[in-house]
Every structure is written in structure tokens, then in C-alpha cells.
Length: 313
Picture 1: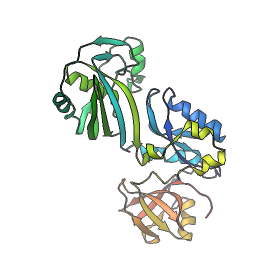
Picture 2: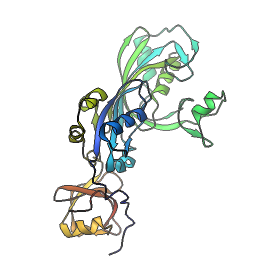
Picture 3: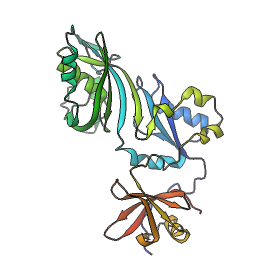
Picture 4: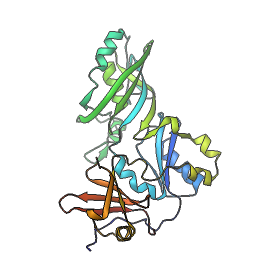
């Protein structure tokens, strides 16, 4: 059988691996949280999915050990946020922690707000903030901003599944939004303020959900600090847990041995238990145990191993 060019760089790593559903606190960068988890677990290979700004809080999935290898699969996950926009203020960073560049006296009604948010639905174009990590000509936008350079920022396509106004209190509007990767909530706040003619800046942001990870099931850093490493490991989700868009295929022992060696698996050797909705990608299982990911070719009728997570069955 022909080999597949499998990615098994960490297949021999027997240390604990999995995903912690972390509730990131304010005043921590996402990397700060990674550093804390490295200290608490004694494991260096740790990453996060979906950066949260320091003043934001909420769901930040932390991948530990070999689970970091599934991070590339989670880029398309939808995210849900609760946000407060403060009307009547404009800042350079589009949030209340930036430098104020203009102030206005808001004058709006609930009906005005309803109309202003009605445009945030489906596929739309959004202009990212100047203070962001996006690159233009190989340079981060925030670096241009800090140097006082004006750069033309091209709009980007985003998807808004839902945006609901939860309440209005004085000049603060609180809303919940479900959106795609690459959506800047600060830009939504700016655009709401512009639509109401008074400017607006983000005053608070909580990520309620990222893919399958929900804030109701999250752990805080304070809670994790009180746990022993083995208790932290016991609270981790398995690497395949968030891959809900992958199909599932069960294979027998001989096929599993071929799979972990990077060999292509003919489709008659696999039983599909869930259809893939992610470009033919599958989670592969032997005796109910997750052993890796593979891409199924309908032309060749074979599963091509992509990442292997075990060396023994």
C-alpha cells in the first residue's frame, strides 16, 4: 500500500493531552493564559484557539499536548458574544480603553437602535479596526497606527448569524451576536454608533461560546489554580471533542495498524457512523478510540491519514 505523507510529528508524545474550556478573565492576554496553564500542568506544548483582547473575557479553549494539532481545524467555528457599546464616544481603538478622539451627545430611540442593528445579518462586509493584528504589506495594522500612519483598510467578508439587542440603559446598548471567524466586535460597535450619528465604542465584551465550548461549562483561572495537575487533566475534553463537523469512521484492527503507519485505507475497510460536513474530513476510530484524522477521496474511495494521535492499539 502507498504511504500518504501523514503528519505524525508528535505521535510518540504520551503526555496528557486534551482541551480546557477556559473562562479568560479581564486584564489577561490570551498568551498570559497559555503561560499560566504551562505552569499549572508542567507541559510546554500548549496553545489557544481564537485570541481574545486583554479587556475581553469569556471562552478561550486551551489545547494541551498533542491536542494542539487540531487547532487548525477549528478556524471556521462560529462564536457568540455579549457586548456593550457606549454611544457618544469615539476612540482610536474603538473601545473605551483607547484615546478619545471625539465626543457627541447621543439622541436616539429604541426604534432607531432596531434599525441600526438590522443591517448586521447574513454575509456582510466589515472594515477591521486600525488597532488590530491584521497585516497590510507585511506589517501589522496596529504598528501603522502607533506610528500615526493612515492606511486604507479593505473591507472583509464576515457572517452574522444573529444579532439581538438585549437592553438599553442610558447611552449603553447591550447586544448578543453570533458571528464567524474574523469578525471584529469593536467594528460592530463603531458602525452602530455611526448609524445613530453619535459614534460608539465597545465598553465590555464576553465570549459566550466558541464552537462547541460554552461559558456555562468553562473553568476560571482561579478554579484551575486550586486543582492538582491530575485534576486538570481529568477536566480536559478529548482532542476529537470539538470536531463536530468531521465525519466518523470506525475501522478494524488491521486497518488501524495500517492507518497509524500512514497507509491509505480503502473505504470497504471502514464503517461510516457520521457523515462529514467539513470537506471530506473524518475522525477515525478503532474500538471506539479516536486514533486520528483523515481525508476521504470520493474519486479514489480511500481515507488518507492526515494526523495520527496514537502509536499503539
